[in-house]
Length: 549
Image 1 (tube, helix red, strand yellow):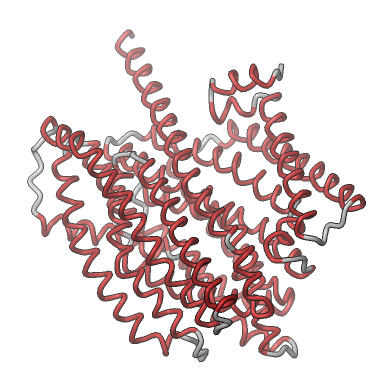
Image 2 (cartoon, rainbow, N blue to C red):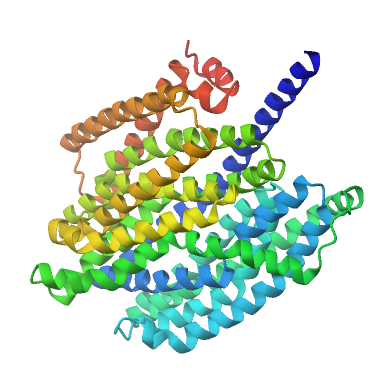
């Protein structure tokens, strides 16, 4: 009986430790991801202003180049960062730290080779990838330089995440964005305002900034490696050395593990690429639009709204990066209870973060859009709708990562394949029905289907306690709707007092709206003990500091 009690206590302690690691890791990755995303959105304000009348064309060109770049980047990294994170966590869970370190060195050879191959293809195949637009060619070629070195950067992040050292990855993301934004703003100002040059050249230099940013991030990771070098050496010295795995075998395992990651992680990028190559042609069949009108509509959802709602999705990406190594460790130890608890914890944390964030963005969509791009009714409508679409897209990011963490790669690839087929089948009807909102609607419906299949699969394998999760889930939804209604009402009332169409007044309103929305949700979550379910005992301290009974 005592032994049984001891085992139960150990299991509970292990689950608490895993939850603590997930919260800590998610916090670091969230800070790094969201700050870099905010920087990646804030630069748009001066950037768009300096392009003037060419702003929507520049946005569309930037989006087209980046969609191609994202696919090549996923191919170049070959899913290896996530695979390495998972495999390092697996071997570390077995106390085989020496194998983990050799795995990293092996991955760097693969990274360098893949970077060279993919960058070369981008350079020479850019005319065929431009979809008939000559302006896209130099943009793709400028991004090839980033593809050359980012695989090595990504492998290093994956290795450190496998040790659950999330801070270096988070800091490197932030530094990467700082270097990138400084270069692109300086280059754009020089070309557009001082030289009065070509807007295409300015976009090309803006995309080349990805290479400059990568150099800054690599410098951070080199510093992190040097800082942890002694600790890693000690772990290798004290660890087991029972596994005899050759370098070639490690590479084969790594590549085998990475193949599903390539396909799964490219899910969102594939959906965006479908939009890029189908939207203009399908729009031609549903109405009489000029090329300029098609470009503007594409820019509204593919760049303008995308830049803003991906800030919300970055929250999900941070959770995804954290949960893969934790689930892989539980899998290596055959801890079924641990895996179930991890999945439930991640789902609740996702709902707690993503649902209020998405509804909050929808509530202040007009103000936020005006601050970044100037007021445009069509753009505001697209952003409001995109804010809701970010929920199924974010859930896909997290759920797919959990499927990979428990080694259900083949099943996840099947689910994604079904989702892509649905996207292709409903793309034209959605564009015919909603025109500029059509691609987002098709993506939303397809992602809902994928998410349902993943959650059903989890339930069948682990028997998730949905009944126990229903109370906090319903509270999150209810509190988010209350927050949305109050924030929207405040925005409408303020709109009668000051003009909502100017950038400065819109910024003033957005700050008030975000503060009120965050305050309302935080108060309700603490008052009705929802926060206790998510962050545990820390919520008591917050209640005491905020004088909430």
